[in-house]
Image 1 (cartoon, rainbow, N blue to C red):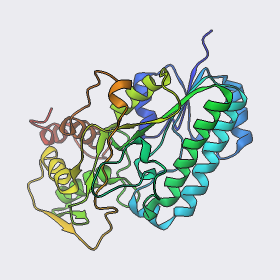
Image 2 (cartoon, rainbow, N blue to C red; image 1 turned 135 degrees about the horizontal axis):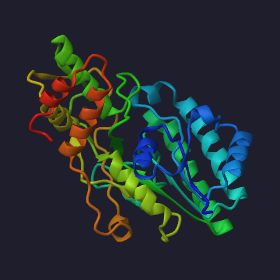
Image 3 (cartoon, one colour; image 1 turned 30 degrees about the horizontal axis):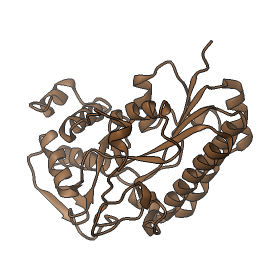
Image 4 (cartoon, rainbow, N blue to C red; image 1 turned 60 degrees about the horizontal axis):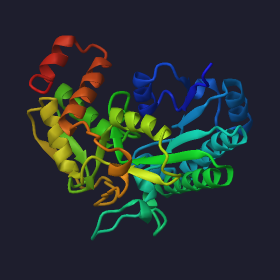
Length: 317
């Protein structure tokens, strides 16, 4: 019998996308045990005996959540990562892929950030706790791969979005929060309000693309270094908000609230290794990805009819 693929964080945004591609894998989520506890992680991995691991578990949040609770994001993510990777190393799991984050990298005004910049300067203070936890995860992967001869690696996707995203206005990431704000404006007759000036530049990748690439990375033979995953050079938040408004058929104005936080003004990453490691890859377009995300969002709204869903997406399928 072939040893199974184990996916931690199986109920998260990326974990749910992996489920759509690999329903045969074993998925762990919070109800299966507290992965902050090393003894729990060891017990679960010994019981499952996986042949490979896709480690996606972690505490995540948006700009506001990180800014007010940096210590918690540092502590909990280090505990989870240490417990899972230590157990995997003890069992000598031959293949493991995990996720870093763009916020672990420094950013520069005059050029794009690449994989070699990970430790070249400090990350942005607003999410320093999460960022340094991801830097520690990168180090753990590298050390285990080097010392134990394991084929472990990581990907660094830019901001992911898609079905099963968080649409919470306080803790969600930007795409989910903007979809919620646009929906609320439509429903309540209010104005679609966007935090910040709209000038901030970010990069976005559809979660199903990352799921596919993560499964490919498990078979990769390129060493323990991370690979940045980004489909483009970035767009402004204003452009993102307008595109969401178009996909959702929102007819009203969009107002930018400059008194609200928007993080760093420009975040741009570029991979120097992606094309060689994933030749021929094609990313989902922003409009297509947002259309599928909005479709899923409406399908989960109480009292929303299928007719309203289809009319809202008319012309964007």
